[in-house]
Length: 110
Length: 119
Image 1 (cartoon, rainbow over the protein chains, first blue to last red):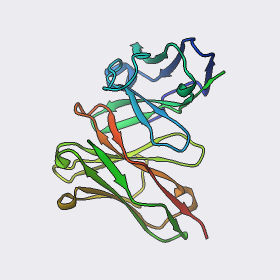
Image 2 (cartoon, rainbow over the protein chains, first blue to last red):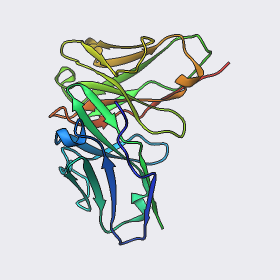
Image 3 (cartoon, rainbow over the protein chains, first blue to last red):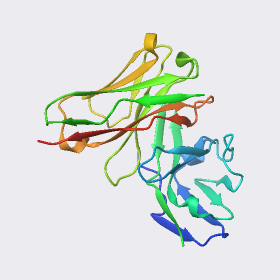
Image 4 (cartoon, rainbow over the protein chains, first blue to last red):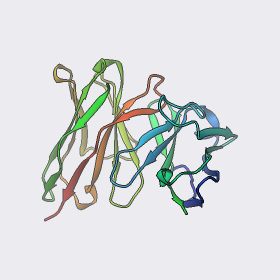
């Protein structure tokens, strides 16, 4: 199972909005709504930010939102803040009991 | 509150074995699956597989070799990852992560265990 495709890096200034894409195939991203996003700060464990395409866990800022169109899912962060600078990973579940990660995107807040 | 606490860092020689533990608290252990994810230095996250904590049945990622074994001890609410015949390429941080309620995401993560393989 190939990794999902994410841009290696994105950047934005404080207060701006950015979008990170996650492209798969009709067998994974396009096949279900089981797309989730994780934030990872350096040296820390990943943290769930979005699940089932667009649901936010309790405690996650509403500045984070998710969507999907066809084989591409997206994570949008609005009102960018310095603390948002981190690596972001998407995942999909192409079949029961299989998980595939995206390659990760480094977000830089300028 | 849900917590996953992993064992400490390990330094091993090539050919040795290591066993990483992940102790769960704050929820019914056998009601949620447990996943293992690794991250090589400077690299992305890689899903290794998961353990059905109710049945004890493991599922391994397609390209994971037989050197990796998942196990459980439900009496102490702990999941284990054992790696045998260690190689330099096994150097990584290993995370345990709980399945979310719908089984479609990983909602709680351990702090990670660094395994370093070096002679």
